[in-house]
Length: 468
Image 1: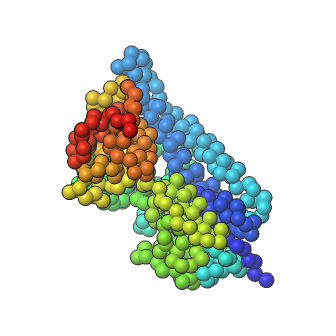
Image 2 (image 1 turned 90 degrees about the vertical axis):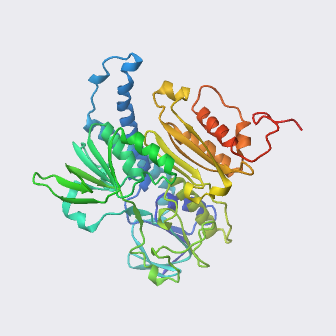
């Protein structure tokens, strides 16, 4: 006799766990199935261990400012890379344990199956040779690093983020292929920790920056610290000394290790989608409504990295909650999507929110900007490099988006994202209080520059709001 559940969730990552916490509000008759390594990509090999390494690198790099501040003997500091990696792994394990803790009620209820599921129809799954039918099914299988087949022959000298954080010591030299978010973050951190690093990307942009002005600022700023070869694809061959020879355009180098960070691919290959009625896009991903997570008019929902849309933890959590509620509540509700926001934890941070530069209408958009050079708080911190660019409608001042390359932009971007989601204007923000001296004053300056370019009523000073 086949087992029947109200909701089956495939994948116990960030999206799947967010979904199951909603499903449990409506029914106890559910299953969550995952045959991979538990603990979420974020906690095991993504957001969290990378930020630990970034923090270590930032702390060690700070010694370069000691002399100007009258702090002596900074040049005698050294890094114990084995101890550093052990610290990364210890905190990584702590974060994974936190995830396991949130899963305990699910495991204790016998609702977790550590195996792989495959569709045999829209409403049935094959799990360990048994058939499970479900009124609704949520696909939350996540993604995996893209890894060219031809490079597998180089063995453990080629790394992805799935195995990088298992290193016990750091190599003396490393090539980072792919200067997206993760490649840039880890590349700069390793360079700061004394590894000879070269970052390579066949594109002439880093961190997927859409604003060409911010892209140039970011490349110039970070490029002064670490070597980057942009605009040519990388080729890997054997060197005579056991190292790998990396060639990109006219450049070549021999390194001990290579980190491949050229993107992630949705985990859909063995899911049996061909046995469903789902319509797929050109990349084999089910078509779905992002406001409901529903695939067409089916009883199948999709959430998280696997949908190929916004592979970021807070988005996965949001999508998982939407999928969970709609799969278990008995009705389909459309929910407002969150304003897009992206953060690269390099130094300076690279951040964006709202509409990207390539989505703007040049004729109706005004752009305000501020370089960080003269910003007082940034000068005091020794981090006065970078730039802020903010976009708004010319005729109304309504905020549309922003692109930042500056220290502490991870905080500044939240302020701008919240303003965009609340449909605020440049005038609204300039009427807000700004303390002195803080980095937020750079945002204020960019807003003033933007305000001067708006076609709005300027009868009253923008800082003052007349009482009604």
